Length: 140
Image (cartoon, rainbow, N blue to C red; front, side, top):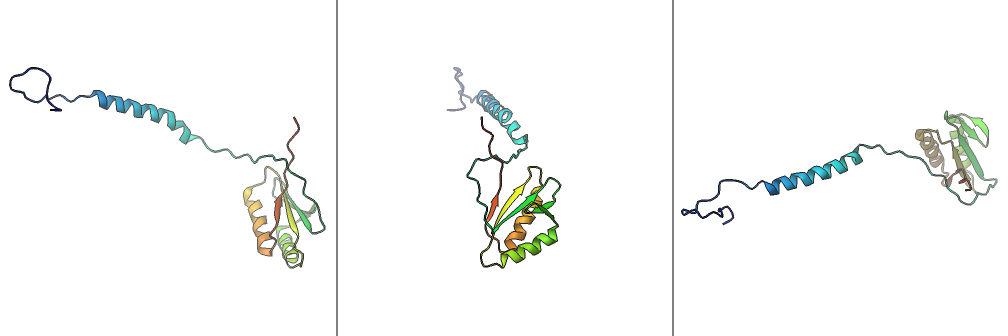
């Protein structure tokens, strides 16, 4: 039997001791797994937007270049503009027969909330083509 002893006792009584070796082996394996995987759960994800190399976007008369600096100030074709005026210009551009393309140039320190607000305002006005302007990858 599984619990029987290997000694030659005449009565054949079961062994009263529990074999702890397999339990200790399993616990040690689990301990090693937890030691290895625990640091993976504590690190925060750092997000750095990539620099990409692509073909330069062509500028057309229907292109709007909207720049956002680190402080969140908006610039419509390099001229300062307020958020309310930006929405009005988006609405006027969205009603045109040939809808313009928006080139969004945001600084690396710009809060994502501001970028999302600008994209939402453009989408509500009917501007569907939005491009992100990036810095070219430095040559090595």
